[in-house]
Image 1 (cartoon, rainbow, N blue to C red):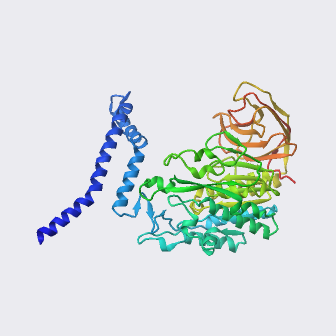
Image 2: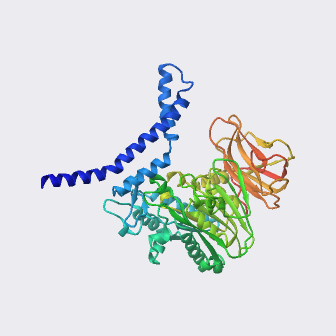
Image 3: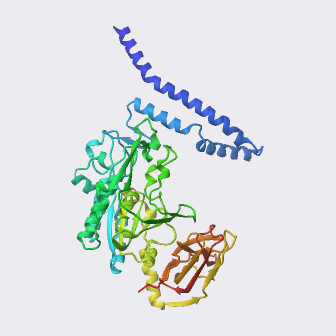
Length: 530
């Protein structure tokens, strides 16, 4: 009997070791492939000395991490092995009882963030601007029956703490987590399997609820026919999407997702433009769907979620002349706002959006004062509620500058009209003024703009650091406009000297165009438009 038991144990052990053995062989294969290619590139031209070999060690390690041979195959095999072994956690991602991927969220003190939002609400209220805080849903907050032993998350506690503080201060809030739960939406109805984002249909529901609230308060006209399910053609791209969770564990651990592309069954007339991340390049389009993301499957290098609103942009403007509401709406938040924004553009003629993670051309309150929106919506996930870098909306800085302006009195200088003639130089510009004071807040106003040649949507002014020859902040004025436009900015502290440059179009893309600015005035302090 002992021999038979031994044989069973040995057989079982061998079966369990097979995936591990295959995994180790594959690792050796990939390491060999990686090292073969990288050794030659990294060792070449290395100094023959102790310093040279020390430098080589660091460069070789970085090169291995960046160029790991068949890295995606490694991630897939690692995920398959972990799945076969029945392990429910991999690379800080957890597989729930229904097979969906999630992550943990530690309990945090949300009081500072809540205080910032309350200050923002007071800032907007003082200017007659309506504000609604729309909390995007968190997969980890509800659906506790799907959580396996050993998995825990404080997402719900963080949400409750923040919403309670905002409600107590009188801030209008819309907790989409609570709404989905109250209306019987399951996790499968709201989320992707391998991603943390909500699905497009959930974003459509959030747009409907938002418009219902605004309509009930008499703030906007709600054309409900445009947000009905029947008003959209839904094309399902099967097995097309590997979300951010899935990219960490591969396609074989929890599978891949379908993603839906919703196109309207009604007439639209869109102009969409935005500043691309990490560049000064503007994107112009007559659509708000980027179907390039739906052309082919690339699980690890592509993100089909970005089909909506043409990906993550620090700042974007969408004009829809067919919309019923002649209102200017600012939507700010993170990537959760993309499908939400997509559906809301059917309701408003002007929609401005800011991605709080990437916008760096001044503070949020400065931008709000410049564009004078009628309504501000914040659509943010709990992931970014605890992101300290976006918690400061610049309210305190703005109020301090305004108080200083009041104390000192508002002074200004009239600047000469500026014209930029068509040129073959791709970087052509003209200087509006120099010798700006570090630490000082200014307001630049322009009475009218004119533009001819090339794209005619925007002209650009830039706060330029002269010794570093670096653009600090940018402001994109509407072109061919007879309305007064303003730009509020604060010059950084430091020893650099600063000037304001004027470009036609955007920096690096100004060849063969001409534009002009008239009625230019520079205020020392904050000039608030009447």
